[in-house]
Image 1 (cartoon, rainbow, N blue to C red):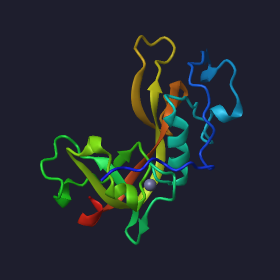
Image 2 (cartoon, rainbow, N blue to C red):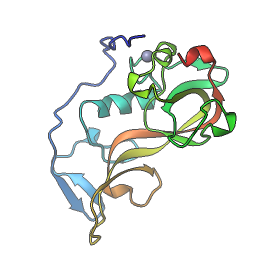
Image 3 (cartoon, rainbow, N blue to C red):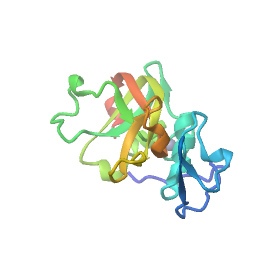
Amino acid sequence: MTVSPPPASTRLPRRRSVSPRPLLHTPNGLAYTDEHAEDRSIEGVLLGVVGERSESQRFAMERLLCRVCAEPAERSRDGMLWLLPLPSDTPDQRRREDWPEGVMAIEPPVCGEHARAAPPFWEGGYQVFYAAEAELVGVYGTLHPAPGVLADPVERILRFDDPRMPWMVATQFVRQLRRLTPAAPDQRR
Ligand SMILES: [Zn+2]
């Protein structure tokens, strides 16, 4: 099955330049030298852009839109539909006990169509499930060392209450998925 290209959507945010912007170290954390209000989330997290996808990802994750087409994600009485790559150490994707309760999703949910047409690069293993809870808990992005700390920036997930958040440049929003129910086999493919 082929994945049809995402339809043009007027709801997606306008794409901005992706050239790196100079960062300023302030006593309160990182800031852009030319920072605007839209450079921070409502939680006050500094937002960055990696490629063209970051703003679309954050928009879809906040509003729970399909990661592929930006239409509303599929819902059932078991919750909202999500599709995640299988952890590499999980031998049998159908075993209920392997379902990753509390897994951190760094990609938005999916609609029914795009759960059936899973991305080809996940053909080696992915799982489709409903999650009754999908709390927005944090961000994924580049964590820079605090002043005086000798370390390289690292890519990671941080919860909103993490004290290191002032040194984070977030590219994606993260939701924690709980109360998972495997989706029906016909929704795997
Ligand atoms: Zn879709």
